[in-house]
Image 1 (cartoon, rainbow, N blue to C red):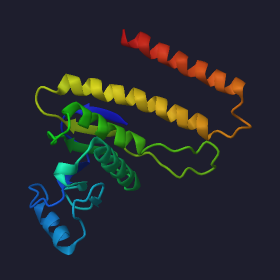
Image 2: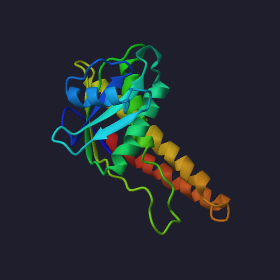
Image 3: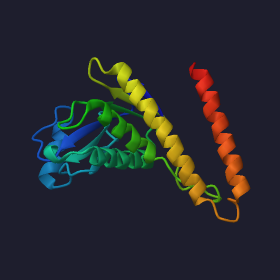
Length: 201
């Protein structure tokens, strides 16, 4: 999953707070869903409309005053899972300033939620259950936050790499994850980190 700054993408993710009166981009659809009780904007609620020309995924954030980094992260985790089911390869997200949330922390929560949605441990399965589809995430950030957003995303990606490694090691059967194997894995990962560090210099 690659993160880019700017507009573009197969599907637009539209953030919706509970009680939102209208949505400019897809208001006809939103009014229909709201009146039928099919989408209310609850935290983590997802509704995807990818068959029409204006492909959109409505993502509920709950009540605006109650939004937290954790609820934002979970909402984008749900969005990532839904997009994977639909085999969507690229998305467009406009990242607004959110009440009571630092802008860069919000960027990181969005990226983390999407990245976490990709994790699966299927090393010993003959048929993979999770098929990764999202290749490109385009984030439309506010003016003056571009460089800081890039750094924030890179930091999250590095953290998630470590989290996934720890999960992989924890999920290995005891008979295969011997102390020697664990040590060799650690050395292998450290070599990768050193290589990345050299490339960044």
